[in-house]
Image (tube, rainbow, N blue to C red):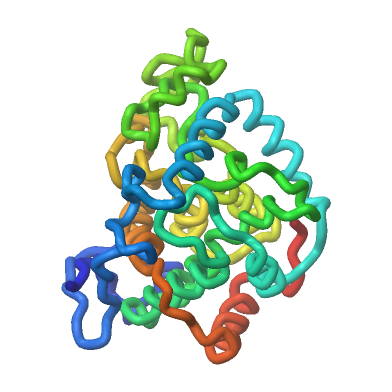
Length: 304
């Protein structure tokens, strides 16, 4: 089985030209091949599959959809936006994820560093010249360090899982939308309409998303003045926003820049989702390459 991906012109970097993927190209002859099933032998993102993780995942979304309110997210962004926890390198943060397993993920129960490298290496095969995309794949989940004691040991529901906007009506395309009825914002007339506190085409940058590893890593990258292109930051911030990039919900809040960046997010998502497997990556073999990218796009030490 092969996968269709959008292939940009590889003779020019996206950062210099502001390019988006253009022509559909079938991957073949050594490119990334989509596995027929996830690490448990089931289809990907099947939240009804009868597995040992089914109830764990379901309970996480129940807590997430009840606990994430507009006020809660504003407080979390203010608290963690101070970047006063620790100073460390990107690779040091990668190694911390050896101790993290994502309870929201029905497709994998391996430590997160395995997933980061699987995703990055899969993209590297098909987009060999887009080094910014390789690095984005490596770091996209680093915000999951919020689960660790040194970062406050937040509960899983406040760190992982699909993200969604606050301040407007919850869309039924979200995973387990039935739990939103218990959210305090559900019956708040200021927040429960299509637009809520927003307006048509206001831009996702002005929309408050549920708190988690996505938004935190975006804040870390931005505050530490990364030179990744905007498309990379968009991927980091919205890669768990499945209601948007898989179901097409909330598009009325997007502006033109969001639409261009969404093209790259859809490319990235195919690898983020389908590269999850039991195939192991030789960390020491690929480490020098990714360290060179970190040096190119980030300072040696970052504030977290």
